[in-house]
Image 1: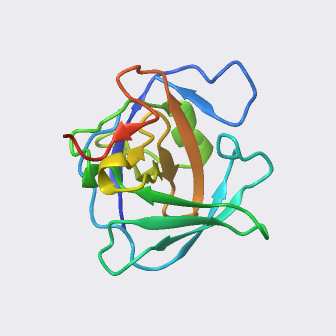
Image 2: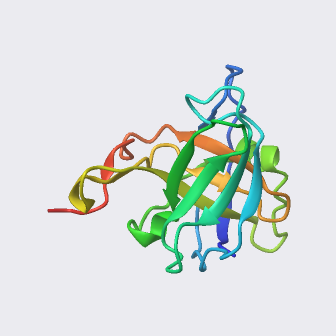
Length: 167
């Protein structure tokens, strides 16, 4: 199961009440993702998908690199996601304490870090060179409960359309 240690940053909860959490650290390394399908419950809907909270995360193939995130709502969308370290090994955003609290992620007393899975949504182009990842809004998953949240990062170094391949 994919897990990442999250160093919780001190932050005040977002002032607006909308589907995404405004976030101000992720540290540690990520292990291999799960190979079994997992039902996920977004505690707040994904950006642009109001009213959809129940999804299934499943490996797309036997390689364990590409995953589908499929809405359980009939006719709902199917997204492609990857763990960020697959293509962006240095991706290490700061995540607010509010996000980890919303997911019910306990912090380890010795390290102050919480364990979570992290995925980024892909936009698929006509070929691999045109595929992009949304690094500005990763999805955090509590592997113990299946609760998840999309975290909007305020750091402008992360883009919603980061190329997977550098030419």
